[in-house]
Length: 233
Image 1: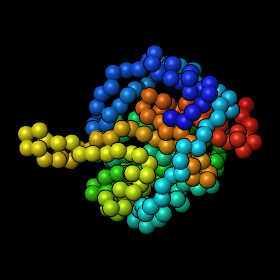
Image 2 (image 1 turned 120 degrees about the vertical axis):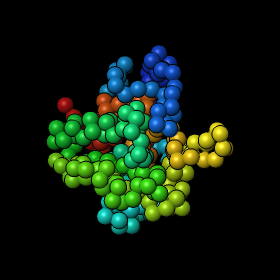
Image 3 (image 1 turned 180 degrees about the vertical axis):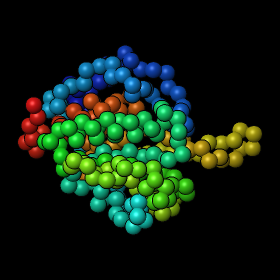
């Protein structure tokens, strides 16, 4: 988490007050719930989001199977990027990020000042099963630009292409082990993370499930835009 003199202290104090027992859902190590926001987040523009690091670059595939540089999807707009895998079905696993993105989408579409300023990127870390066709089906109607917001669904051609991105973002993944045989099984495990990236490709915030809530993320998006002189009522 980035250093914010006032906001970070408030978040951490609240975290200790509302922290739930960690559990694993659909192979995700989670440390919170998204249903109810149990604290009042600091208002947009009352804190600063520091640059954590530059987002890594690498080759990805869009839903049409075209090879692209990931950086193409991380420039010129505020970007919210999350890793998923489509076979996760537990509502508190990958779908948690999906629900948060959907909530943000509705608010962005209802706020004209945000139109054209934000994009979403959903990137699979299971290239063996999440082909471009699978990602297109997973995206459904969300893939179409709507009221100034574009949501991209990406995968990679192979684990070789995926690895630099996973390592660059610090997104740890691993396969579970069958205790009876000691062999890896096809259940993926990772700590849920979503990344807020500015127009220059710098990561400005990293959310785990504790703070992954539409209001928290929206305040951060507005804070980045207010750095550029934007005003919100």
